Amino acid sequence: MKVDNSWDINADPFHQLLGLTLEETREGTQPAGTADLQITYLRQAHGKWIDAEANVIKRGRQLCTIHVDIMSEDGTLCANGRVLYALRS
Image (cartoon, rainbow, N blue to C red; front, top):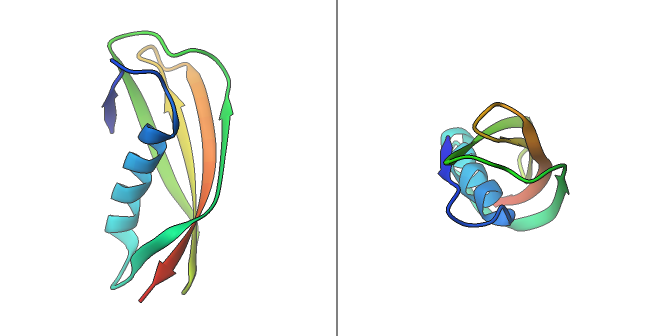
């Protein structure tokens, strides 16, 4: 997923990508809220766009853990994070 870098990196690209990831894996459930969110900022992102990749680590009946990497235009890792979403059926 490419995210416009006309604004500073904050939790928004994480939530955008996580929402899309949950849509692909939810199987009849909806996010009930963020139970935990951890973001590690490594360096400032430069360029016209940033690239984000999300992977579902574990998807249970009530919780879903997703890991996210945010990279700058040249492929340098700028931030990573983990979110734990509560799910409702």
